[in-house]
Structures are given as C-alpha cells and as structure tokens.
Image (cartoon, rainbow, N blue to C red):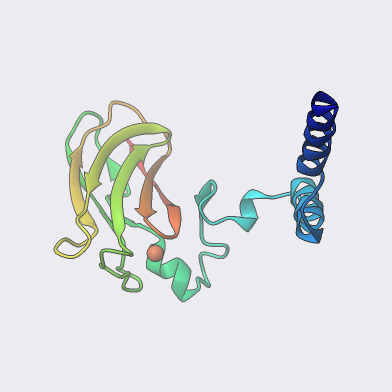
Length: 162
Ligand SMILES: [Fe+2]
C-alpha cells in the first residue's frame, strides 16, 4: 500500500510538472512561434551589412554624420606613393563619446585592403591620412567607417592609375 501511494504521488507530480503553469506559458510559446515566422531583412537592421547614403545628392544629417569622406587625387602614377585622407564628421559632426564614437576607418582599393586606423572615443577624431601606392587599378578607392552604435558605413571615390 505504501508503495502504491508513492507511485501515484510520483505520477501525479510528473504530470503537474509537464503541464504549463499558467496562461503566460501559452502566450510566450505563441509569441515565440510568431517571431520565428517573421522575416528579417538587412535593410531593417543598421548593424547588418554595409550602410550607404540612399541619395548622395540629398543625404540626411544621420547619413552625413556617418559616411566617410575620401580625399585623394583623381589620377596617380603607377607605383608612386600618394596620400589618401579618410574622415568622418566632415559633412556633419559625429559624437566622440565613450558610448558613441567611430572606432575605426579602413581604406581599400576596390576589394583589396590597404590600411586601417583605430580611434579612442574622446581624445581622437576619426580622421587619418594614409600614404599608399598602387601597381594597378581597381577603379575605386573604398573607405569603411565603423560606428559602435550605427554600424558599418561605406563611401567610394574613383581613381585612375597611369
Ligand atoms: Fe553613430
């Protein structure tokens, strides 16, 4: 008899544990199912992919604040060193605070990496001049700027190698 009581108690206890405790469990499960079915796109998330101004001729202040500006000659000689300046904040100032700052700038020739510079949030400005030389053309210089809150931003500048 004692064994039977123990068995019934054990079964009842297991059943109680396997059933939901309240309506919230059902609601949470329903919400989780809805979120799993939602389709996310890169355009919905500023931290996904590379951000570019939507209209270069009519940029918003937010876009001006983040897009890196490339200053370089339009034409350079093959294998001859030249300067490329990349800066964020030239078009519209970007914050330089511990919670919001440009952490690095990168320079590419097409998709070929050339250089990277890191910045401290308060005491340095996101501006750097790189000295580079190119043996052949990839058509464009490309700069990437990383904002710790607003992700990766890109700009391009055509360059000719003669
Ligand atoms: Fe930002």
